[in-house]
Length: 309
Image (cartoon, rainbow, N blue to C red; front, top):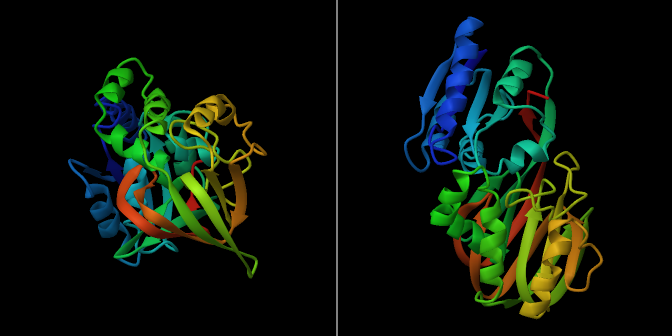
């Protein structure tokens, strides 16, 4: 089985280069054969993953970077049956790595992955929209949380905080500002779970997040009970709240104690369709998808083979 590495040395404002140096030292000292591809721009990780997983051969795919790089690589996997995926964290948030229960740094995860044939089968999510679709490992959302992710991609604040190891705080700081400026939208929602269909009309939707893992945005536990091997998504949607009330509920959200609060609803589902009255920003694992008024989130159970636990 080939060991293929996709490496984003620019993640965490360039600090990830040191992580690759340690990984490379481990590989050389342990006489591990490998191929490496370094990303230099958008969608490089997707292209490299397509190349690595389209030959009908078993591949150990190691992806080093933040959640954005991991998402790009995930969307490039052609043959899930023959791909053994290992994320190696080097971003500012690393929500996927923590969300699936990995412990230790990138070198420790690599060591565990290379010294076992065992793997876990995890779910992934899919967001479907007019003109395309995108897979996600952590979450996909529409509304304020997606707009925060879009801002964070080129945020000067994030670059400054990364220098002090505090890049994840960017999301919370941007959220406070966006709550008072972003337009909200009414929505028609259709939910499918175990063959049953349910329809809702929601007023003033602030955001709706489809969670495969429990936390996004640098560790905010949007869905504290979500698990990436549950076979379903947990949808957290915030609605019908004043902007001031949103702000006062932020501490409860950050501490994972928002369940049961009025206007903050969580529901498990296999698939959900959201029709917004007006277009809102959409993200997948923090990567910008577009401004859309209709999306579908659905779970793809037990498809991703992950090593390194």
